[in-house]
Amino acid sequence: MPLEYTNRKGRVISLTPTAHAVDNFIRRWNKLHPVERMLPQKAEEKMAELFSTAQRAWKLSKHEEIRRRRHTRDTIFFRTNEFRFVVQNQHIVTVEISVREKKHLNKPRRRLGDLLEGKR
Image (cartoon, rainbow, N blue to C red):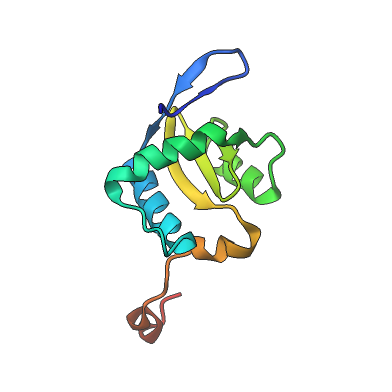
């Protein structure tokens, strides 16, 4: 299943996930679904399956609008039930958890050593 979407002009745009996006997808999938762990070999296939059901986010949240201005105007957000795909220049740059009750899982876990050194 290819990673692609149709833009406003009707052209089909093919997307390529970055290594960062695939790593984030695996890590965040495993946090949401600890029973059915995601294997790296299946990650891109599962991303394509979820992306095919994703809808482009036309009405952006305040946070998304700030991010869009900070990076580029080319940033596009797609949402599924559980994930948000962030697309820039025909690349999926990251995948985030979009479920309100689970968004805290997007942040990396703090290590005890970081806390002892005073890092935030």
